[in-house]
Length: 185
View 1 (cartoon, rainbow, N blue to C red):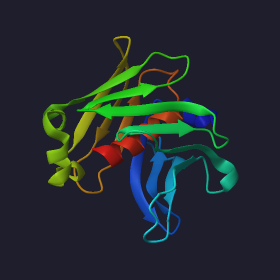
View 2: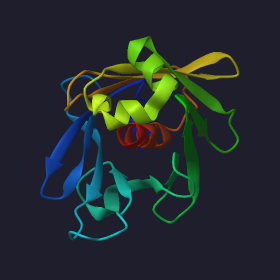
View 3: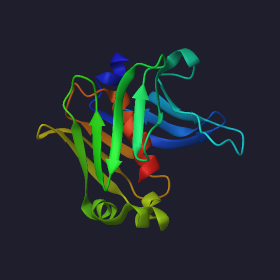
């Protein structure tokens, strides 16, 4: 877990494999993945999707967090495998809030053309399918100081580059934010 928490840059690349779909997360270098995000496959017609699993390796014993929607639309929670809360993510009209216990609220706002379009009318962006092709950048701050930036590259298989400026920000919550961004944008 320390190897993940000390990273100041993460790159999440979308994958689809026999275990499900999600992201392989690396440090932006050639060292290979430092974390994996997967949502297990479900039977067709199942009304509730299982939560995403954030792990440090392929085994069940390597799972460090689970993330999924709960409560109102646009709300996402991240917890340890035993259910202890790591934090929550909320989105409304292009504004994102990350809540982590004993830490200031981290607020993110989209930048650039895609951010402006999303703030104007996210339902139109999603309805037209633009959310899967437009690049975007969201800058997060805590108490007016930079906390992290998440940028998505263009295209239907765009990757997410995360630059972290707040060492105290839990990387599992940041990875949960990537999942939420891939779902709600």
